[in-house]
Image (cartoon, rainbow, N blue to C red; front, side, top):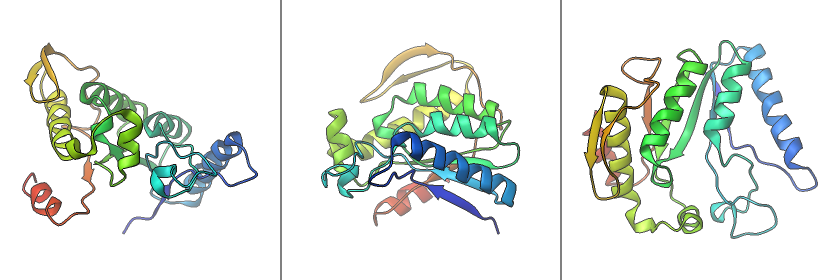
Length: 199
């Protein structure tokens, strides 16, 4: 059994964003020294305080809109903890860039990175980026396909519904082989068999 922290990096009313970052790093330091196995970062967009429409409708302010950057900082300041994302909202990210950044963090952490992926159940995140939420499933599946191809081929081409390119070489390749562990979030009845069927 493994024990860790899931960090949504909330910041409370009356505190500052700087306080929230420092509190997050203090928690990481405590997890490392206290013997926990890992920390997992959420991905939250438009999560400003005092507006119930923000924070993906939850009204909880958060500073973790760029979890991969925070994960890299955490990996650099720790020696033992595994660092994961719970979850990267794939449809809001370009898959080639995501493949590059995740592989980079995998090297910075020397193989201590876990890649959690999902499509988010909060349409507000999509609205802010101008992406139709109705496309989230198709975008998620295509993004994951591109990321896996980027990590398992020296060069590859892709011609899909949302992404189209030829002869791309993604560097670095992941530190862990063939790639970091991938954890897929599934919350709807039809998602479970689709994800399970991918292994």
